[in-house]
Length: 282
Image 1 (tube, rainbow, N blue to C red):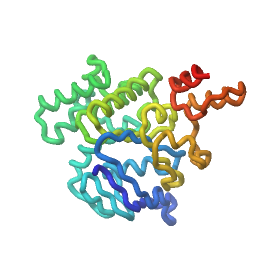
Image 2 (cartoon, rainbow, N blue to C red):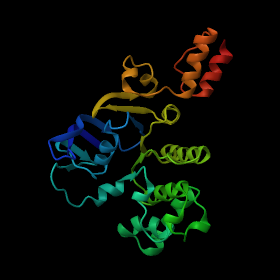
Image 3 (tube, helix red, strand yellow):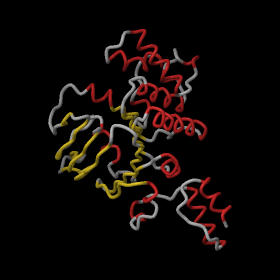
Image 4 (cartoon, rainbow, N blue to C red):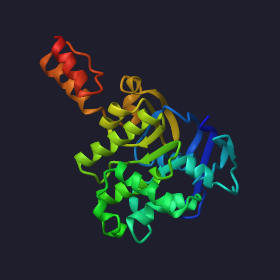
């Protein structure tokens, strides 16, 4: 078992100091340690970031039970969580939250060094991770804060990959990237998922990413889990319109073609390849 939530609730104090704000409530959720590709979706403020920060014990539950690789995470103070954060790597939405060292290479080396590798071993792991994200070698000695947004994103991803985590969590990994870089990043994690049987958990608003890469989708609404199932079932769920999500581009086009041209094609097509097959069939 990788990560298990049982009736987990997390509350914050309201900014005005009056009362509590419930960010997630009564969450039951299991993430296997291998072979999953899970998209976490929901409108802004639905609790997605709070949920994933529990997955590597950056946040602790206010109520309920949380287990991460058989380690029970208690509502109060926890100690010795480094091994959990090595096994469950979290790439933040904003890379500047993760980058801090004077050069890119040193920054990516920090994690392996922190977990006991010797300098040369850490350097080897860092270079391997930077190559995985196709980061330019000439920028290894550059300050991470002089990089472009896309370069910073790749550097922050490399910092997590260098730890070789069992589960990789990505908070809006394509935000700030151009279409080419976005495709490269998603193909990288899809390859890692397939080649190494690793579990990937991704927060995204992009339904094209969900429809192409995810196997399973978890939808949050006002802090509660309202859907957990196969992506094929998400877009035909009778409550889909209440989830505040959009259809993938291929499905939007299929619906338009069916309605405007009266074509006899199915609407629930998750990729343009599937749509082309439908059009060839009629």
